[in-house]
Length: 343
Image 1 (cartoon, rainbow, N blue to C red):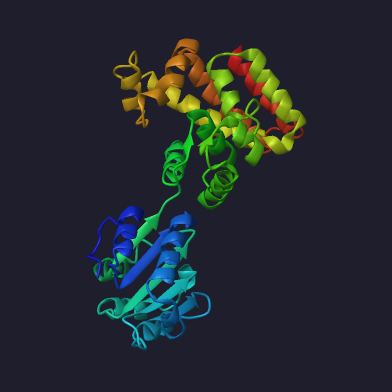
Image 2 (image 1 turned 180 degrees about the vertical axis):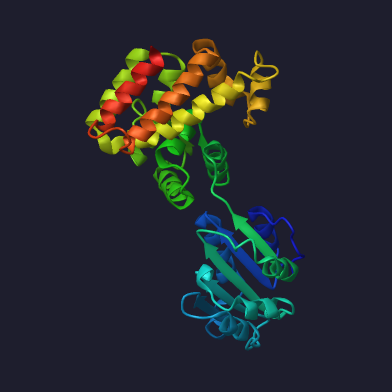
């Protein structure tokens, strides 16, 4: 049996599972379905032998059963097996959780009970329920990754599969796919399959060929052009996206630009802003290399201009949602923003 984990992480849970240490209860909740699915799928595929599953593995749905039925199922004895597995999907729809709370105070050591609660977490006011889950087994919150966490995730995912990738390709994928980890890992798997066995390396050309993200006209290159005040290239990219709206849009660029200039504003207050290492530490970046664009940005934009740009991005964002803007198309709004940034 796994020991109680006050601050369970995905890695710690998976380490226990792969070592054959199963807790009697797993409550998996949060806005990121990827980790919830990975943990529950592993338990479903490995906690029992194939021949044991017919009689000892039960899949329930929170909208179809109540807490009393879940508790009764969990109390059953396994048939000709060491344990039984009960997986409750859509656990956020469960009623009568007081019956589950009673079960949690004395869970069956022969049952692995898994709750999959997606798109949210347990109501914080249910303190006794949360406490009972923690005491019975594992409570895990699967959080959405922040944009800055996507490159390390991509690199780690590929490294585990013995595939290398350069920083530009990493950023291209992160910018084009975003933080939907299920979609992101699916695209990475497609990349891996497409690579020749004698050259397991992802390059911008591979990304363009397999994912359809232009290595010359994309969000990463737009940000790079803005950071380096390359007016001609920035306008080239904006024109490309205006003519190819499926390749990118104002709605995907605004969060990226807001995040950059917001961090750039913070960088101006770094105690050691002349040092790339100092700025990286101040912004909590994963490496000094990641601070390079902020060092360049502080040379090319004044603190006052950055404040004005942030305000303009907010204004354009409001207009893109129809506020004080009856008919200006997104392409024109993007041109307006780019002109303002450079002038």
